[in-house]
Amino acid sequence: MKARATERLPAEAVERAAALLRAGRLVAFPTETVYGLGADARDGAAVAAVFAAKGRPSFNPLIAHFHAAEAAFREVVADGRARQLAARFWPGPLTLVLPRHAASRIDPLTTAGADTVAVRVPSHPLAQRLLRAVDGPVAAPSANRSGAVSPTTAAHVLEGLDGRVDAVIDGGACAVGVESTVLDLSGPVAVLLRPGGVAAEAIEREIGPLAHPPGTGHAAPSGGAPLPSPGMLLSHYAPTLPVRLDAVSVAADEALLAFGPPLAGAGACWNLSEAGDTTEAASRLFSGLRHLDSEGRRLGLRRIAAMPVPERGLGAAVNDRLRRAAAPRD
Ligand code: TXA
Ligand code: MG
Image (spheres, rainbow, N blue to C red):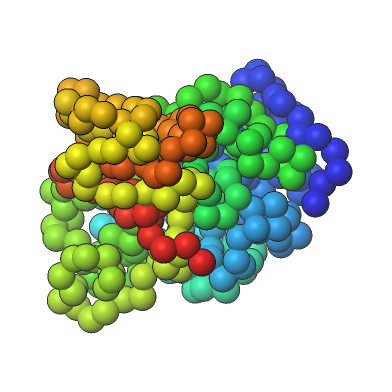
């Protein structure tokens, strides 16, 4: 691991961050979803350092980030569906898994050896400026230790990765707050690999019904059973306190993750959205899990109890992350 402390860069220091990335170093940067841990996607040694810094298994591929769709579509084979979704949702919180282009220079470690590449064009102005300045694909997983809660501020990044990455650009809090939606378009059936910042309903309005991988609580897809996204198999987003789902009552030794009017009696409380808005809930989810985890431990509480969140809109992404936070740990 890196011996030196992580350099904190203000928003103005985009050129410095781009120079570090071009030199094969690791830079954490804000996107509208969560902070990413960036490396030059063509540089196998830099990408290997990302896996090491996160403690991430190298069979779990990374997303390649670009400033514009034209740049992304040079690395993959984009069909009509991909171009339609890019026109509608990019820049924004949508990742498309597509067949790798024969001329792509993305390192096989980025894709964990797969013949597909996950590509994304984020909308955050700092991410846009950085990716434009680098002028090449930037591989970036969420900037947290593998299995931990994703970071939505620069301080969260440093909690997990200080000294393990070369620099972090501070762009404040991320507006969307959950990761991008990952959609597999590498075969004839569009498969929702991970619910995220673009609601599945909005994608379905563009290209019709989506299939869901097996084991995600949805009906089996009609066009054969695709493999789930490699990263979706793990317990993930885990605070240190255990999480209890669908709470309809709460005990004094529990911290409450509320949605709508809160239950009375908890030892600590964080409301995802008093108004019952699923988009607001997504933006407050990871900071809430971090807050209740540290408050709960400080107060000697046993568990985080999470009230139910409806599946509509970004509620599907919130519930997906909560199910993973509550999954058995290995
Ligand atoms: O919002 C986001 O997506 C953030 C920001 C930084 O862009 N990134 C992020 O990356 O969440 P990560 O590595 O934490 O999650 C990427 C997901 C993983 O579940 C991974 O398995 C999946 O995308 N993935 C990446 N490449 C893939 C591929 N070629 N085929 C299938 N799944 C892939
Ligand atoms: Mg992640």
